[in-house]
Every structure is written in structure tokens, then in C-alpha cells.
Image (cartoon, rainbow, N blue to C red; front, side, top):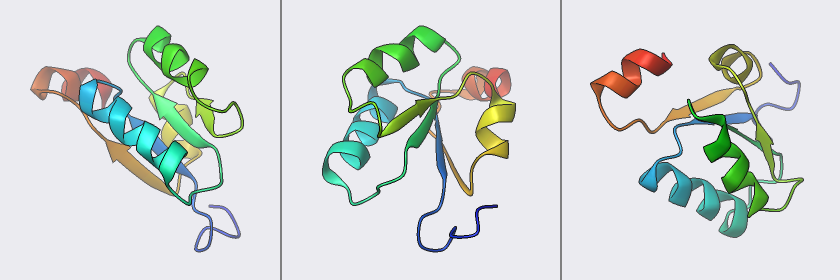
Length: 89
């Protein structure tokens, strides 16, 4: 865990469907969170597409669940159904 986790926790976002994409965009574009937001999706191209629309210093593409959870103090999961949950976690 980061030494400054209380003031600037590392966040990982799992799931970039319709709802997840919108929430990530709002955090990055309108929120006060300053560290790169880690984003993961089962389909990496979806993470890449979203990242390309956001400032490069505001998001970090995570390519595995292991990377996401090992680098995060807080993990958000925005997954569509039981199948997605089972395949992701």
C-alpha cells in the first residue's frame, strides 16, 4: 500500500461497459482525483479506446486482474452480470 494512501489512494476500475466508461470519464474529467486511475476490462481494446480519449497522465491501462488488485488501495467493479463477474474475478 502506498505511504500516502490516505491522501491519494491508488484506484483500480474493473469493467468499462456503458456505466463503467461514464464513471471513469467523470472521475478523470470532473473529479479532484489526481493520481492515474487504473482501468481494466476483459477486452483490452476497450481500455485502450477509453484511455485514448482521456489525458494520458490520468489513466493507466491494467492488463490483468493481478495487476489491478496488487497496485490498488481501492477497487471498483462495475460488471454487467454474473458471467462477467465469474470471468473477471
